Length: 273
Image 1 (cartoon, rainbow, N blue to C red):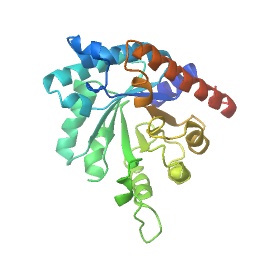
Image 2 (image 1 turned 180 degrees about the horizontal axis):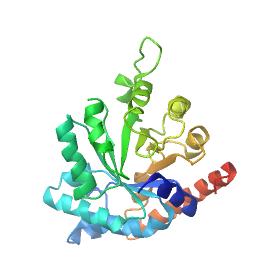
Image 3 (image 1 turned 45 degrees about the vertical axis):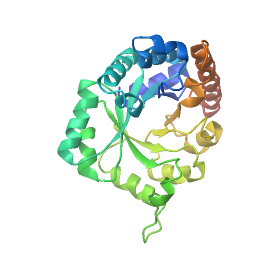
Image 4 (image 1 turned 30 degrees about the vertical axis):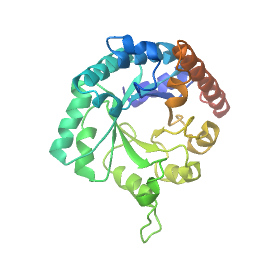
């Protein structure tokens, strides 16, 4: 999916919602454990209930890889079921030396046909570039994360007073462009969003942390919005685990609708919808 198609979907659905598909066998409704493929059965129900309200899904590979070959099969079935009209982001957090990264890129962009992948920038340009060589595919580069450990490195400053996360954005903009590179910025750090937008005014931002982690949709939209919206707000637990009973999918759909309605109101005020 290219940038134009993504923006078109945002306008059509009046939404910039991304749903994280993190199926935990310890949390999904018990009756699904009787299914031949509980992970996919859960995901399918969530996708069916939320598809009208979202523009992206983000399966987290950790929840699939731990089940071995069956987990990878569940992941493939999930990606296929999402289809071509919704952005599919493989939350794989890859990043290794160039040749290894090229095979990671083939894995997720060719074998599994995902639209985007999260990538760690620590090893530098040659570990990221292979992912940027695929047409109409995206890298979601980790820049400013919402976890506590982000304080260990991401806020270290250089002699010019720039935080490390700022340096990552500045440097990586030379590797990719607005059509194939977005940045992952945690919703729990809205006070730094203006710095992100200073360096990347037109790039899309993938923003996890709204909902269960406490991030505010209105706060992030106020400081992170650009002319094309430029935001993909990810919510996982607050949607997919809105209920652990038989009505789990219905409750997930209701929560996605609630967030979409809030996004619609924001978009209307901004003049995009």
